[in-house]
Image (cartoon, rainbow, N blue to C red; front, top):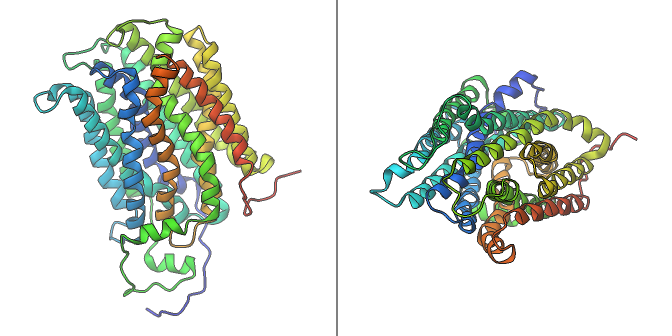
Length: 454
């Protein structure tokens, strides 16, 4: 193979069906995340965790993601196998994630090894690591396969599939409860409707990943070299682990500017996922005392899980509209508008007395969620150096995990001492932060954005 520079070729446009197959595995990943986000707090609470301890258990997810995603991204940039470049990571992560989904609701049966609470926390850590092995390369795959003009649509379709997976995963516990599965805590502390939801989630996760593995394609190293305008060298030096730190120091300016927006957004999301169940149970249902093993608490948990399904349903629909909204408002304007809607949605929960009204709060959250999953990556992808998509998508995850880690360290103490155990104020603060994120996004220098329609 010649080492001279090749003339850069344009990537072919892909059909909508090809983009769907390419991102279909994310439906399964988000199905698993929805079960985790909607039910982990109540599982850990039934195992004996206090409400102010929850952030410390939830901190496992961003910590693991911060470590795993850059490593997976770095090596997926440089791993070429007969199966492909990113696909081996999808498949290994799917197998491990499915195992974790089966084990988590059964943590109480393993008390001979560790107390149920610590066993559950350990499995949550294993689950998050496995999710991240599958998830990180998907962002890079979209950028790998799509020409620049299709990337907004590509990430929007990916967000749509994320929404579908999350809707079904969030609604599943309530659906099973309404169809004969018990909501009372079983011998191991977890109700049957939750346990079987996780079993179904494990099956959906691996099936969805297999759709992407078998029905989508990746470009060969030679094709990638042609698209990137670089000669592919068979004897080029192997990637070094230390390259991760070099790439971190040299991250694009746009990525740094997006960091503040991501901080506000993901600090708020972490609070929502951790505290909404207890906030609704106490502020809306009026539960007091030791309520965590009561049917009423599980009812509140089912309402929250279903509400999370609503915001994911809204996100799925809004994701398909994002390319058109971006043409009207611009990429920054679209993200700012969406974050404001999410902030108003979270703030409105404070004024709810009827649990059914939670549905309307989640409409705004859905707009924000769709935009958070798409627009930062659209803005970022055009600024990433060629051949560095995996590693920089992984490094960008720092701006997602660090705010969650900070929240995990201090969020519980804030709820306990500043809010006097009233979780609803954590949700109110989350709403304020989303609005702060909307303001900060307006200061990003997005030079590559197409001009909005006047």
